[in-house]
Length: 247
Image (cartoon, rainbow, N blue to C red):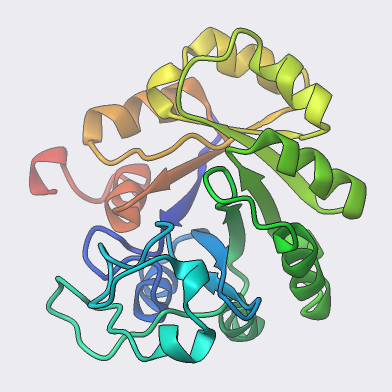
């Protein structure tokens, strides 16, 4: 049975402040194969890495991301609520620059399903091309119209549809949007569907798989990538170095 790749969800979210450089560096340290992160646009059009539409939950600031300039966002503490200090909201530029020194893969989720950032697709593509990361990146979104736009702008960069709730025909939806990847909530998957989708040429990267029994099930299903808050746990399970009860 093939082993899946392990992607660190928002960096190593289980132990570090999510979507920060320290969380991404930790993913590299523990041996993850890739990282997953989320992007929005600042008021002045910079591609910034943060999950929510607002800064309230993950920083000491308040308000919409898109109502703050990059300079204002950089003044916020993105270590908020953790034992870490001094982390700021990264830009996609910063992450791609850092990734020139490693071989990690990158899943960029465009967070344009609540606020429609008109220029987000093009700005992300421009940065990916600037750093020649086309072959190391997959672009994804819950906004499937955005995925279709990505295909029109950059057919050479891999794309995937995200979905949290059941879709009648996920592979048909992906085909319509010209995506080659499926990024579902892992609870929606069956072994039969995984096999069928892979036979049709789709890459399965379910999220967010943290518990040993769920990790084991996804490995048995043969998914291509496991997206997890705890990549070291998943890697230990794959390598059979630690029993489940040591997690």
